[in-house]
Image (cartoon, rainbow, N blue to C red; front, side, top):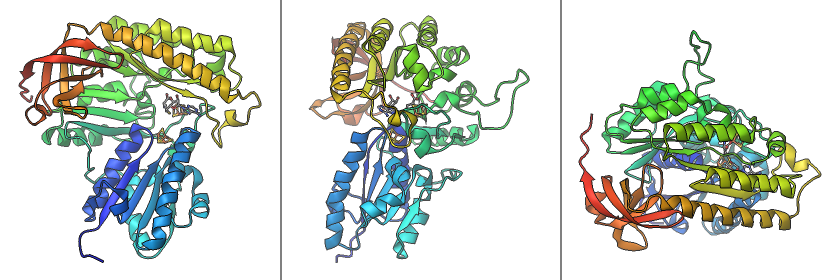
Length: 454
Ligand code: SAH
Ligand code: SF4
Ligand code: F3S
């Protein structure tokens, strides 16, 4: 054994919520004296932060785990951790499947990593999956970026979409206080972060669990109020939020986004299906007409706003005609981006045991057709950028061309242009767009904006 410092490695699967949790867990490990190792095979502590949204996401974890479990036989002091949504879903069953594991911890326990690891180092095999009140985050996350950051706003989900495991694995909604959110953002501003994405499974449901109602009878703390409250945080130049649920997306929120200059004109609002009968069986709580009205209102206030969403094809019982209603919605709205997925039956969800499941062939055929339409429409949407001057926040070097840097427009289009990352990282640059592709743009830098903090 060498006396060098102990190393850790984290592999993260799944959504932004998991990525944010991983950054906080990495922060805890660094506080404990561990050093990051890019290569899992060089690490003494390996943490898989897992996703179970679809079966293929879950299976990926088992193949990674199998490899490390073998390694543990040669290196018994290796610590193996499974965190996140598979951990929560499987709990002790994971230990039976992979007895080499030291720690199985659900997403609500992320901030407790130090305490749980201590129990492991004391010689225990630990499972932490009981629902808890999420402790306020006092650790410093180890953030992947120095320019953009995630800030959790609401944990959990109170919906019961019939296909979805998230409520089972993430627990009930827990909103952080506006003060805690603002103070995290102020710290980010001081550290030089330029963009903050506020995070929640249903971020527009923020505040329902916090005390206080207004004289008009609405909750005192809503996402709209939060945006007004955090908007003037010094240093933070851009604010985004995700994911929004159509059920809670109000005109008041849209007006706030239009009014507040730092809030970017990009909205991620999953619709899942363009057919009312399917939406009803999914228990989504809205119709496609309502969804269309939301987008219309957004565009009335912000004509250039980018719209992205998630959609599922091949939900149990979905007919060809119902699927075509999804195609029609996609065509009518003109999405800038769409995350698509074939329905995957998940254990513990109602739709998984319905008898009207569709064949894999039908699902993959529909996915293919939808993806084709999405690419065509995104390419059309990209055309509007041609020749325009766009503000790009530079995040990184283009990994495929070191002479270029990359960043995003306010509307979230990935944009490349020639420049030196050392000079431009974290800068807002006006870029003249000269090339457009379905999901990215290329341009020429025109002017670097000097940011004077308010
Ligand atoms: N809270 C967000 C989405 C969370 S999950 C919302 O309600 O919109 C992210 C996406 O995964 C969902 O939008 C959905 O499109 C997809 N998804 C969830 N469960 C799925 C399943 N069983 N099969 C296929 N896709 C699924
Ligand atoms: Fe899942 Fe529905 Fe909750 Fe989104 S709103 S996380 S799809 S249950
Ligand atoms: Fe996956 Fe859990 Fe997110 S299941 S999508 S990592 S909430």
